Amino acid sequence: MQPTPVIAREDGVSLNQWIASAVAEKIGAAETAAEFLSRRAGDARPSDLLPFLDAAKDEPPSAGNEPGH
Image (cartoon, rainbow, N blue to C red):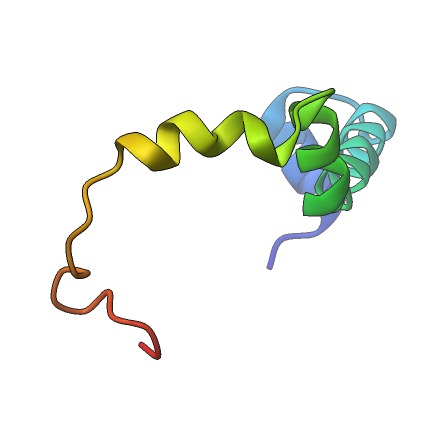
């Protein structure tokens, strides 16, 4: 693995910029799926999905998608 100053130089940024970018990337990655999905769902309710579920075909799962796999 290359030393951080070498990587920053190869990326064409200062070491401080590279570190700040790496920290920001790490913070973004630390967001949990629950937080993300909660924001995306907004005011949606489970009952909002019923029309989609009602329109879904009633057929067995395809090979490899059975419960327990």
